[in-house]
Length: 413
Image (cartoon, rainbow, N blue to C red; front, side, top):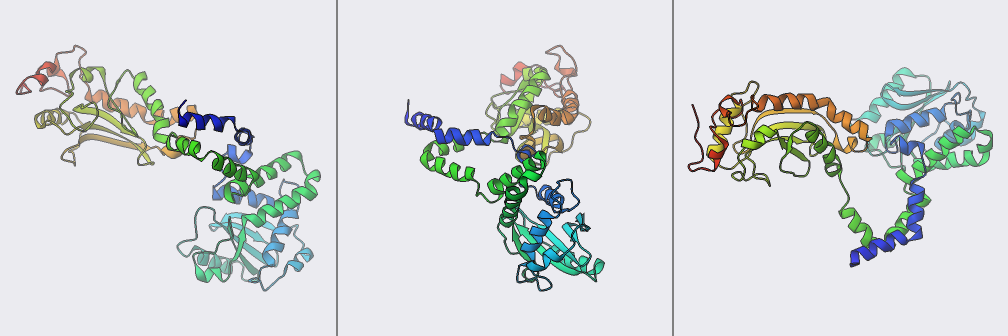
């Protein structure tokens, strides 16, 4: 074995790596739903456990602990943490996304506004707008503003930072852990699992403080070269999605063309028999014309086009003239790469790649009929190879062999 193989073998034989792999395979409700860094999902869960009337069965436990943390901050002058035990919290109302506010806690005396930020920050004076909204709708209540982030960061809005209490997911996770330790046996098994899974996600994904994070660092340091080699060769969405498009091309009875990262290119068998190869400079296969789907680079759309590659000017001219005879074509904007048909459909590769095989295939199938329709519009109309004068895409080409002749082309006007 070479040096790289030795290092990979050492990694696979390391019991710490095996332990890490085993832990990562343990099911977690929030990991399964892929919600670990989605603010709205965290807000939904927090709204649920803050609600004293929620189905979690904790009653006011989490809400009371949360309020103690908030009211102990020096920015809060109306109350202190010692006032919380005197509040009747049974009728507290929790609102989600009310007037775009992430979480609103409504008590008969006070309201608490929670702005939740995980991978983003406040913008467009939103904190000021929320304060104005609450002032308008709750003029008689004491107002408390909370800026929740993984590490208790300050808001971008410095003025709002004078009012908003910085609260972190670390404090939140400590509160949950304490509730589980003291009251876990009195809660239903399902609720305990939800809380434990959520606590794991907070520490592992948001704060990077879980035991698994520490183990990962330890294993990485011991096998740095092996991991770096793996990372440099890991598949990306372009690579992982290509086989699905390749399968659709083959299923449609078409012929694969030149391959580049993030693109699938093809021809119909009839067109493959006559399209000149060897005279274009743009693709590895030097094809003069291909159907092309770019499905990765925009990370927004799948973009289908009929493309004439740069190369021999006479071939490009005749191919352009042929395609321009087909209804629905548009005048190309470029000078070298000539695109006469272009269509796009929503297709976020970075998200779709994480879906099941069935979901990925379904996403492609949504736009495949339109791809097929354009392809059929562009291919030879008759099934007899050689009768190119009746072909809609190449009505000017007499025989395909003449592409190798000098001066290249004979065409019938």
